[in-house]
Image (cartoon, rainbow, N blue to C red; front, side):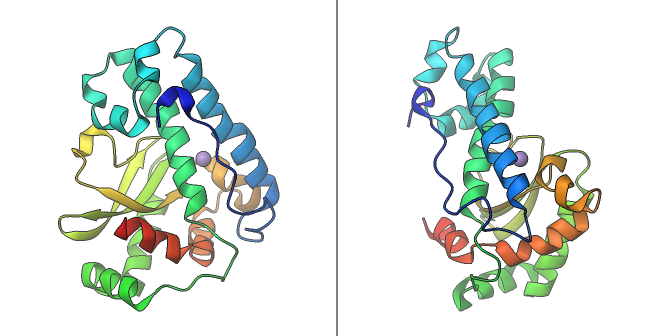
Length: 207
Ligand code: MN
């Protein structure tokens, strides 16, 4: 889809469905204000940059280094903000309703040693990321890996040379948890495991 045609897709659940891991208050603000805000700001610059509107967003990510500096910033911040949240909503579901398949579980074991070690590394990466950003489970040439990105950057952007395919992500910006958890990012990250949609993660891996 071209950037000029992007729209916010409906959530695959209601604002209240992720409660008590993520409250409806956060979900509503996060979706209607933050996510919508990134898209609105991305589309605003198309008036003065019509060529960007004709490009696909993932295409713009892959050649971000070649875009003019001011456009790079908008694609990174607003394009990334739009894409990352669209991805994030899909990998969550109602608490304790999704079980990991044996096949995905063994792939995680192959890459991290055990599921517990995967959780430990995920929590460490998510709690030690300084400032705002995301942690991604990605497929790479070496199997599965955890990657941190700053602000609204993501693993599809040029700096990773597209070696990574995101299959799961957590938003660790304060807006994603502060109303529910205050400064306790660790509690948010640990609770996040209750709402991971493992079927979707596996679908992302195999797509
Ligand atoms: Mn966010």
